[in-house]
Amino acid sequence: MNTSFTYDGLPGHIVFGPGAARRDLLSVIDTFHAHRVLVIASDNEIAAAMTLCTPFSDRVHGTFTAVRPHVPVDVAEAARAAAGGADLVLSYGGGSTTGTAKAVALTTGLPVVCIPTTYAGSEITPVWGMTEGGRKTTGVDARVLPKAVVYDPELTSTLPLDLSVASGLNAVAHCVEAFWAPRRNPISSAIAEDGIRHLAIGLPALAAEPTDIAARTPLLLGAYLAGTAFAAAGSGLHHKICHALGGAFDLPHAQTHAIVLPHVLAFNAPSAPIATERIGRALDHPDPVAALSAMGQDLGIPAGLRDVGMPEDGIDVVLDDILAIVPADNPTPVSPDTLRELLRAAWAGETPRA
Ligand code: NAD
Picture 1 (tube, rainbow, N blue to C red):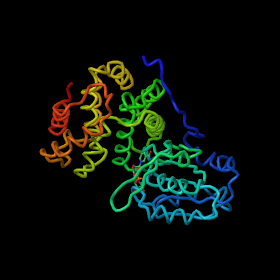
Picture 2: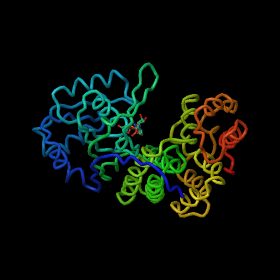
Picture 3: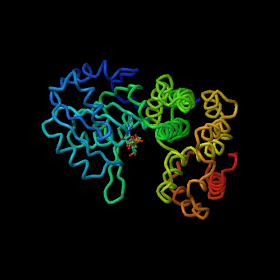
Picture 4: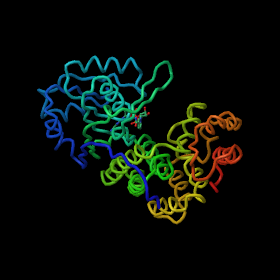
């Protein structure tokens, strides 16, 4: 057990529950004495957002709907212009919308109240990201961390099954990786373990009945726990591999995560027995590697990276890039040969093994 550690608990008011947005949004807005609210939501979500604003419609200062994936800088600038004269930003939507609100907060210092409608987890981190000319820049700034988050599972029930599975599996990866990421500590590990437990309940239930609030509720709580664990612990071998693969071959994000994760767990398991045991406990399975593989298959994830478009000779294309960014304290030391073998097995869709 790690008996010496540091942990930065992030501030933020969390309101959680089915119907919470309808019930509690006004009192959350009142907490900030806000009278000129800028509502940010994409074209798809603005109607639902405005319905929630009905109890304080006289305090809506304006809306911004030109949300785009990965927050292009011109979108950030337009959102900042729309925020002129506002005293609070209300964000309603997925990670792209949250990211737009964060871009506004970064330069204006305005408080953000966030209502997430996917399982991305951005609403609980102080990380911002913007793109310009195809290049993404990220940073960490306390100003962008939403001051309050309203989690309402009812609002996620319209999220299509494939997007729900994608962001749910991403959240599983955040939790598993939190056990060996660079800033891991007993608090983030406890949060991650409980996150996996909730996601492992929610994901299969969701696949069986996509609009069932009884499935959406543990999934959204798991997403919150995953974002919290990830914000505290950071990213490790798994995220470095997925980042490099996604960038080099434009692979689908969620599938890549779901295919690679059991291989990374199998790779680290012999050197991280306590983490592996805890992940197994959370998945309620004696073999967490097999359980993660089965979860992906049951949710329709292909077996190997070759099935999602990665060329076999791509392994050597990304090898050095990954080796350059892998945390030095990954539980199992990473060498060119062991990493190549991990990638080859993930590419071929073989059973993950240590
Ligand atoms: P997204 O926000 O782009 O949304 C995906 C699609 O789902 C959009 O078309 C959106 O309109 C739709 N949608 C959202 N909620 C819906 C709902 N309830 N019903 C129906 N449709 C809905 O995707 P995302 O996966 O939520 O976010 C991805 C982005 O978030 C990426 O840019 C990623 O880098 C970022 N992110 C940032 C952090 C961070 O800490 N900064 C963390 C995680 C993700």
